[in-house]
Amino acid sequence: MSPMTRNVLRALTTVFTTVLAITVLTHIMVYYQNKDKDGEIQGFDEAFFFIAVSSITGLSSDIEPDTWFTRSVVLFVMFIGIFWLPPRVSEMLSLWQDRSPWPANFEAETNQSHVLVIGDLEYTTLFEFLREFFCEDHGVRTVNTVVVVMSEKSPGKEVSELLGDPAYVNRVKFVLGSPTSFKQLGDVEAEEALAIFLLSSKAAGDNAAKEDAAKVMIALAVRKYLKGHGNPKRAVPIYAQVLLPETTLHLEYLADHVICVEELRLGLLARSVMVPGFASLLQLLTASIPNNTTEPLIKVAGRYKQEWLAEYAQSMSHEIYATRISSIFNGVKFQKAAQVIFQRTGATLFAIRVPDRREGADPDDGRIMLNPAGYEFQGDELGFVLASNSLVSTQIAYLAEETVVTISGDGDEDGGHASETARLIPGITVSNAGKDDRPVRVGSPLQQTLAATEAQLKAKMPFGMNVMDTLV
Image (cartoon, rainbow, N blue to C red):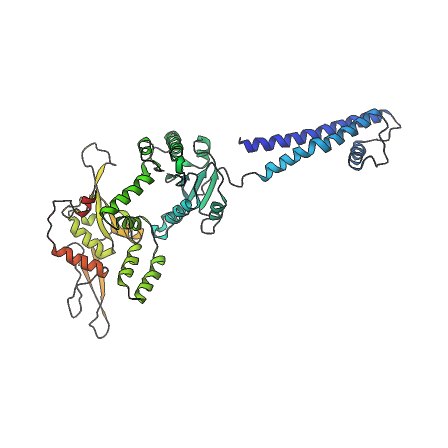
């Protein structure tokens, strides 16, 4: 039982006890009055009316207290009504007005998934998290997903207005509770969540160590709760955000993924000194910007004939997505697969994650390789692509062996179309079946220029090495 509930019940009990005491005295007075057959009061209703009128109007009723007992009862009721009862009623009303409008539990609907976000969040932090989580580029996976925000403190005015926004009112739920309590973790169904995010307050300032210590305790409580109540067949990943680099050591075995804000910020600043623009590149690749935001910029750039700005705006809509590689690429080298994927989907395959294939190895172990041009796919790799939305990653995982490509015949007088069925792997360049055999040009002008330049260069680095390796 919460302290607020206990205070309300205590105030209600006090008021009820006072009213009950007045009722008991009234019955006693009726009993004594009825002992005398000539008594003026003959029932409880008359006695209650007599006491009420006497207490409020100052004895202006026709019935007058003519004995010491009735006079004592009237004086007692007047004292209770003037000095005792009003403060208790005021306390009860104040507690009722100060009650939290936020629920203490969350119950997911049928076929509805949710993620749990824990932390005392400011407006900007929560706004950026929700904007990124519900971005349309992420596809239909987040359409039926509810974000449950859990905090020990009630949200401020700005956060309350954000939670009441029509875009989030049915998709974001705030729960007031302690994440270190197993009961309250059960009230938000933490064991059924798709993921749990522990976010820190970036405005902690000098209290960064205290903020990180709180996150360590929360991560410990959540991990222990999931161990005892979670489904062993479905692990719930924990993503933790900390402020100090030394805190990552404490969360190494408590959270699945840990990000240190200060370490990441200083690392980007240091890398930007060596590679100007690296921080901007990483920021654009990790932030989701939908096409309805970049398309107006592209139109403006085209109106003023700023090709570089149009290229930049078009690239802003690309993010990094992980995807399984289609089985048709088994035995195909990375460079050839990247060309096919770019031609078919417009996505750029730039890295893969190769699992540890040794017997008895942990399936989560592996290594990430950047642009391994000569690597041959074996079917168990995880690819990383630059694409405009998550639908592209699904297309890459289900690419077919053959495809029908329809090309407009620029040289045809009747404006007809020519189509052909081309093998996906052997024939990388699909030619025009019209009057000329010009190759199909894909990608932006800058991408075409880079591709042509790369084709003229000879590989001078060993297998698996590239420019990005020098930045690590």
